[in-house]
Amino acid sequence: MLKKAMFSCAAVVACSTLFALSAAAADNVPVLFGKNNEWLFTPYEFAQQSDAADTSATISLFEKANKLFERQGIALALVIVPSKVRIHSDQLPPNKPLDPYTEGKYENAVKVLKAGGVNVVNLNQPFLASPHRSSDTPLFLRLDTHWSPSGALLAAETIKAVIDATPSLKAAWAATPEVGYTLSWNKQKTTTRARDLVRLLPPEDQKQFAPEQVLPFKVARTTASQAGLQGAGDTVGITVIGSSYTNKNTGYPDGIRYTLQRDLLDISIQVDKGPWVGMEEYLRDESFKTNKPKLIIWEIPERELRSPPNAKFRDVRYQIDNAEWINRIASILK
Image (cartoon, rainbow, N blue to C red):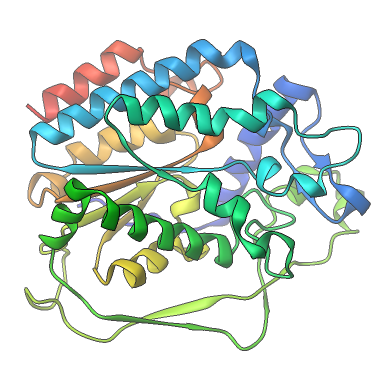
């Protein structure tokens, strides 16, 4: 049985290593200091026009995978996490502003995906419109690549709104057992251990960044499933799968439990494997074979759009020919 991925120091190190390699390839620096040195960013989030072919390959694979899921009666909602450099571009340094190509890449990708029949959860627009962007509870962590509790919950709320507005997604959601959840915000901020960008800095530079404070929320289950208590997850009809943004420590899976009022299987894929190997492993696992979900909510960071299965920066163990990957998925879902 596939186990829910747990947050660990090893995962942080792996994430940091990936960003170090990827960012170095992009701008020769692993971390970008924001205004007044209060924010940190990864330069890898700045899109490159040279990545257009890889982005097109990624979009094509999502379109093909979506059709395969449809044939199995599984609805797919693709959640793309917008880049921190766009959402909090006001915090970028004057010498590295948001360029037009990076600024427009998200919406351009969403447009193509929707034209190809993929149900995309567009987080870019609600994130840009959110008052949290300029508040003391921003949508992304200042010192980390991941979203804050505010960002995670806004993502969950947006997912629910898209489901309600999309007949195929709403029908899949309605076919799953209802489970009651409540949500409450902490009365005061707490210290988060998340600081993957700080860990990329030399030890002497790390010292200037005090631990970041966040305002977390707590989600509590209030009722049993209509199908009974869910011990092994055999009655859960929704799978939430994705990157480290889907890790339970971000609050994102619980946020979705609350907004959907449903239990779910949440899977956070380790960073070195990436979304393609992670999805294939899930589809080959007994948790999928014995309990095919009605709805899969697949999260990827925007920066992964440039990284199809054959992306060369990946660990060689997890590089796959693009055509081979979709053929494997087709074989599983036949």
